[in-house]
Length: 120
Ligand SMILES: [Zn+2]
Image (cartoon, rainbow, N blue to C red; front, top):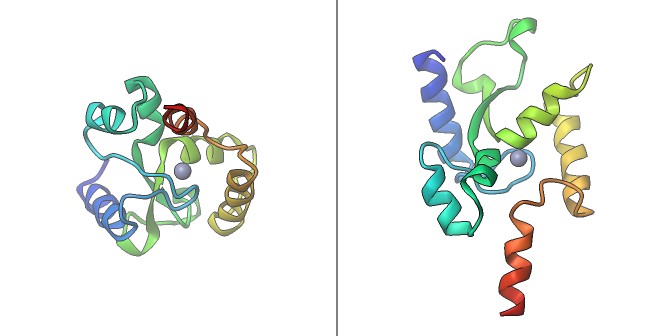
């Protein structure tokens, strides 16, 4: 990853208050263990919340590693988006993720721990 990309990702992460641009769940930059501990999930589960740099305009379409073209997305959303044969553009993808989150049909790794705490 280029230095510009790392800087842009950090800036986006701070601007978004550490939350994913798509699902709005919290993310981590360099400490999965602390994240796992905080949310009472496994380190493996925490891997889904790694902050990744997402290009608004894809690289193959001429998108650059500039701040204006970078948003911070969690690994889960990033991975899902690129799994599609024809990836959705960021705006339609955000709408898609929001509706799935609303129905409880998105990344549920953080949800079980909430259930546990409600029963305690
Ligand atoms: Zn996400």
